[in-house]
Image 1: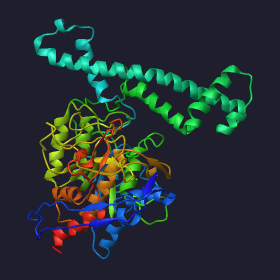
Image 2: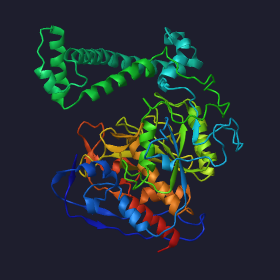
Image 3: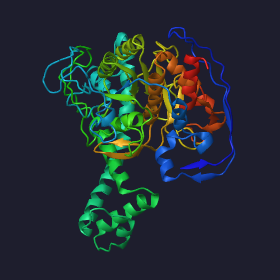
Image 4: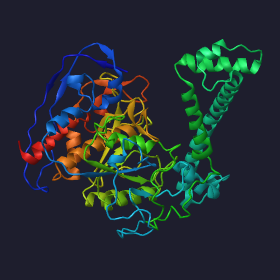
Length: 545
């Protein structure tokens, strides 16, 4: 990664009004803030790589969120504890850098098999697991295709009654996508499996656990198969700047795609319920950790929000005085609308004021249940923060669920904010190459490339994704709700949007094959989130200074 050393000119003009009542505190007006710069690039230091998302563009020359400046501004101010619901896969709440900030249900007695607080969930000490024993699942496309296949498989349009032609057309389109995906993945899997099997044979031949390029180049053999796979790995892995870890990871990815995601014969649901009927609403168990061997996502997301700050371990989360509530709803595959809707409601009913949702899918057959849950959260003054998606797609044109606008235009409530991902490059590569975008349906961008955070078993890793950008914003939202509890969820949403740093430059369009567009065209605001500006705006709205 690179960053710019330069002289910056930052001009911020804020004109806000305020009053003491929550209901009368106005929606903030956008900041008129601009940054100009010109300088040469220099590589990030190791410390900057781990913490770039918290950096300040003016002082550090890295387009982070100005987090340290925000905390300096807040020095001496009082805060209250804020619960953040992490609706996700299983989180390692025992992690050394998380356990100090894990929510504990104060009215529940652990392990007694009794619903002590009478909320309907037995022994929900740190949250709830709506997945039960489910680990892997289909994607929603596959589930819908399985449902339609008995009705339409092998039939021509002439065989279909007029009343069913819409469903038949949907079936044909989904089947085309499904078959194309399988056709594309199958040869890749065969090729990667061959390389991994060959690598294992090379390890056995060299009697060594981990092999590098030098090991392979020095290895002499007359076995034609070993020579072939040795050269294959040298040329297609090491000489391309990759490593064996990446090769193994890609094999796991392909296995998941073909064994679970796009497998019509697989059904991972272990609940025994009918997920097409939103009853019962209480199901699952209290085991929120999940399988540590495969479910790293939620732990990474949780660390971004709430890893204990300044404890000398690993990294600092964004928020202080925060507690993470683990709500397990996302398997390895697409989440069910039923689980998402009930996960949101659980977090709301048990005290969360911010909910992070780093997941999404292209189809949502029971989307109304989720819309109802979003509106329920709004009625309880809860802010939802959602990842925009990682398909380099325009969310104004393609399905991306959950969202807050069934028609892609009109919001059903004003308590959900959608986040795109950006890199540490303050140049044309500022947007993450994978990030979804949308002038109507993505609100703002936040750091989401090479983000360092917690993973299970007291470890740490760099991940990419709008899944990482969303919790950065959820963390800032938690700060605002902690220090300025009078502000509503809607007001916090607009503070986050309107206090962001405005980017007035052309950037590479994600997925655009080199095409450039104004950064302002990629989101509602044309801004990148900024914690320092956000807390200043919140303070002026509440205190009028």
